[in-house]
Image (cartoon, rainbow, N blue to C red; front, side):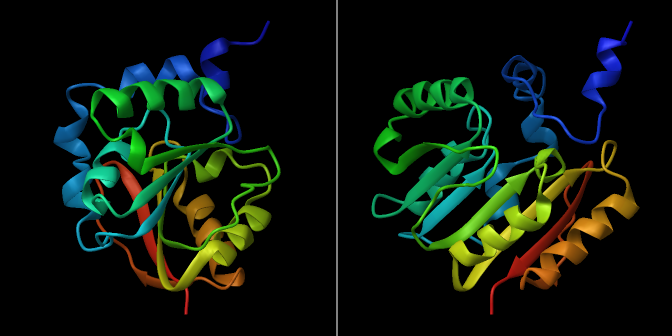
Length: 191
């Protein structure tokens, strides 16, 4: 019989909706303050993409940061995550700035150009990382930024470096490696 705990530690899986409740809690801002982490990358009026937003931990602050003239596309493979996110956006008075978008297992299915993309603790879940990174690069405007953050406890240094290499092969240029608690992170730019 398979150990269910071990299935949570696999290198490729989709985080189940119910698990988000365990890390989207009152302690998380002590480790991952969205405004502190994203200030300098987001400009008012921009079009942003939050890939794998879960229940909107980063999406909601991003929508505040982008202002009334900007928007955040929240792209997730799980409708249930998007439903929770929509509810939270309405309660925060930001639903008009957030566009929930259900993606397929093989494509983001987004066709507009974006200024900034965030993929927080989710790239290791993508079955075809090369295709994902190429598609993401094609969505970024020239000068657009992509912040990739992976969990250090779950994604080895070697695995992360391989994903960085794949992003560079897709045409993204490494700009910096911001320090983010419990994470491996890279900011890329499209030139």
